[in-house]
Image 1 (tube, rainbow, N blue to C red):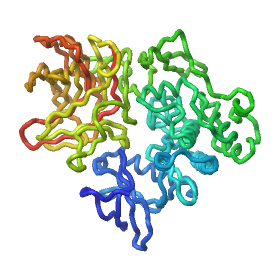
Image 2 (cartoon, rainbow, N blue to C red):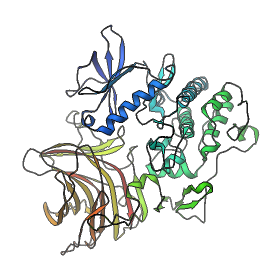
Image 3 (tube, rainbow, N blue to C red):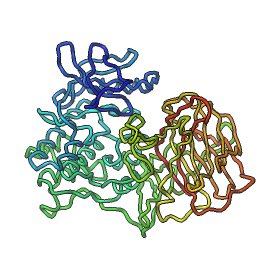
Image 4 (cartoon, rainbow, N blue to C red):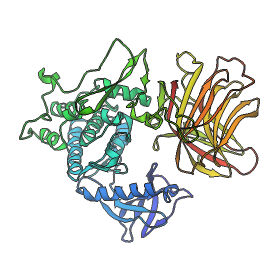
Length: 555
């Protein structure tokens, strides 16, 4: 438990707050105490989201979902106030650490611990699904190991079966524990939770997810195409885990059927979801599909199948994951799809073309920077860095540090040949603002002399394309667009030619600016791309800019 910060309340409703148990994009979880001296967990909505109707709806939905599930397998909701200045929910305090923490600190679970964990968590999923709920983000962080057994927590992105948020086009969750259909943005059901459950069991047994770690797009590729890497497991648990890792959700067992197998029985009525014997133990075929390979080419193939559903496979070439974005491409790129239609100002939406690099920041890969830590001691304070709990990369700028850039590891840190023209896209949020500030994209950035193009969106809606060199900014073009709201995500896109030709800037799919640099910058072999947050050098200004889903492509 961490101490309360200066921004934390000491009391919420009838509950005294003693410290922080955790925090995320939705809110902060505190250890609370009732008037009777009982410990409770108090989850409070982040202040920046209190005025957000959609965030309030999701917060209230989490309360409703937990209340529908039998309390023996989740942290029971005890109280809630959703209408106050700081909405909060009070739940049973489960004394114990998460599965993630226990495995990291103590190592993989032994066979007996694994069996108890597997039975407890699959029973929880059976109860969750029986209540008509899909969890959608089951992972080691969301399994608490209490004294009386494991509890499944964090229903912040759970949804009712058949709701709009489970439909095609929605990608929410933690990549390493996502099912293939979840990665592709297809409609998901309880089978996606079963895939996540099996991935969580593999992590518990080995300390690694079944498809490894790394950049988001690399893991997505493995999930869709590769066989899982399994550690030694008890034979019955291995059979259930393998069945749950089937690529086709129709081949995965239900939670109830998986539970029956783990306690020594098969489902009463055999069907497509009946769990087969393990191939390694019996020589029989398992339902885990093999990778799809076609002449070593790297494409995102889209083709109709029975029922009209599009099937997509992401293939690899030369160790670099590449995708051809088509109308039904990877759903994580969906903000940039439906390309080519006209916008209100006559500009067209950005065409991503062939994706050469993508990062979702759910894990900490090799971008420059550490975890963002503005409040740490002087020797630990950072102005840019990962926020794994929020799944983004954040930049801080103020009067003492007015420009905060970060550079992508591609193309600078790999063998990809420099491209004359690149399309850059990212989701950006002005999380906190004092005075004025801008968020944007960097292109043709030369780190040695600090020069390059900046595609900037100011807090008042002013969009600009700027050439920056030797401490001087030269504005090449500007235009007014919709004012970005603090806490709201905007989509930024930039087309950048290395010699200053064909510079273009999109905001929320609308082409705002197009310009050619009349001076044409000098040739360089050090051209990089990246993200930036900045403020005016004079005045009392501060910005915290958060970025997600960074995509680099050849147009």
